[in-house]
Length: 557
Image (cartoon, rainbow, N blue to C red; front, top):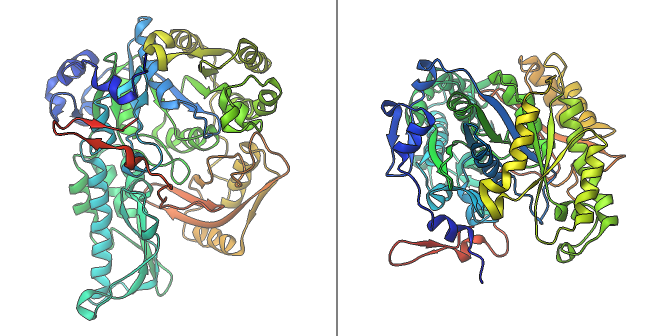
C-alpha cells in the first residue's frame, strides 16, 4: 500500500467553513473577513475589544536542523490537536511559508502527514497576499528613495551609503548584486543595488513586531534607508513614505485564520527567517491566539539557538510575553547525523553515534531551562527506524537534566499521536516559571554579542572585524546601543561554521558587519557567509510542482 503524500492527505480532508472555525475559537463574525470558504483575516480591533484573559503560551523549537529533518511545524500542529483531544481549548499560531523556499528547497511548510494546516496549497502559495503587500511596501520605499535623489536630493543622501535594498519573494542569487539606473539621465541615477528575499526585508520584521496600525506607522517611519554625506541617518519618515507604506500593509497586518486537519483554529501570519531576522510569526497573531485559546501553541524558526533565542530575547521582550512551557523537537535520525552518520545510514541503529550527537539536544535543553529559566519537554518525532534502545538512551540523557521525553507520533496519527506530549505540556504549564532574557539591554553592543556567544553557543568569545567595531561605535553614538541583538548566523551549527555539528567547543564567533533595523528595533549582527538572498538548489522543488486541467496542484510537500 502506497503512503499518501502530504498534499494528497490535505486534499482528501474535509475542512469546516472558516466561519465555523472562527465561531469555535470565540471570534465574533463582525471581526471575520472571508477569503473564500476556508480562509479569513481577523480584524485586529478584536484585541482592543475583547476582555478575555490570556491563555498559556507554549513555544515549540527544535535542535540544530539537519538534512534528516526534525518536524518542528508538524509537531506544533500535532501538539495543538493533541491538546484539544485531551479536552483543552487550544489555538495554534504559525509563520507563513515563503515562496522562495517553497519552490526552492522545502517544497512547502504547512506541517506534514496527519498534522497539517489547510488549505495547504493556498498557504504554501499566495495565501491572502501578505507577502506581496510587504514586497510592494518595501519597493515603494526603494522607488521613493531613488526618486528623491533623481529629483534633486534635498536630503543630501550619499548614493554610496544607501542601505535599503529592493526585495522579491523568490530565491534568486542573480539579484543579490545589480547595477540599476542605467540608460541615461531620464532613467535615474546609476548605482550599485541589490535584492533581498521578502522575508529578509525589515518591512516583514516591522509587520511582525507591530502592535497595531499606529505602531506600524511609527516603526516604518524609523526605518533607516541610508546616510547623508555628513553620515546622518535618513529614514522612511524623512522621505514621507510611511503613510503610503502603511496603506499597502493595512490588510496584511490582520492575522490569517485557517485550521488544522482536525479543525483546530490556526493563525498563520508573517514569517521572517530565523538565521537572518527574528524568525517568529506576528505579535498580533500570537496575542490573538492567547485570547482565543486556553493554550496557545506557537513556533520559533530553525534551531533553538537562533529561533528560540530570538523569540525569547526579542519578541517576548517587545511584546511582554512569558511562555509557560517550551517544547524542543528532535529526531533520533538527526541526532545520529550530529554524531557523524551519513544521511544514507541514518536508518540503522547506532548507539555510539547517537551518544556523540546527543550533546546538541542537551545544550538546547540547558539553554531553555538554565539560561532562560523555563520548563521544558523534549518531543522525539518518531520514525519507523527508531529502535527501543535508541529512544531509551535519549530518555536517559534528558532525565539526567530533569527533563522528560515524550514520543511524538503526530505525523502518522495526528492529534492522537500528540496526546502524550500534550499531557506533559499541560503539566509543565503548572510548574514554577523563572523566565529571564539571556542578556540585559543595558549592556553595550559588544558585551551583548559576547554574552549571546558564550551563554547560548558556548563559544570562547566573539571577534569583531575592524569594520564591525567601527559600526558598533557609530550605532552607539547614534543612540542605538540599548537595542536587542539579532544574530544572523548559520542555522546548521551552534558556531558560525556550518560544518561544526553537535555541540562544538573551543571556537570563537566572528561578527563581520553590524547594521541597525531601527523600525524593527534591533541590531543585526552578520556572521559567516549568511546572505539575505538565498539561491535555488541544483534540483529546485519547483521542478516537481504542477497543476492539472481541473486546477488540482501536485508536488507540494
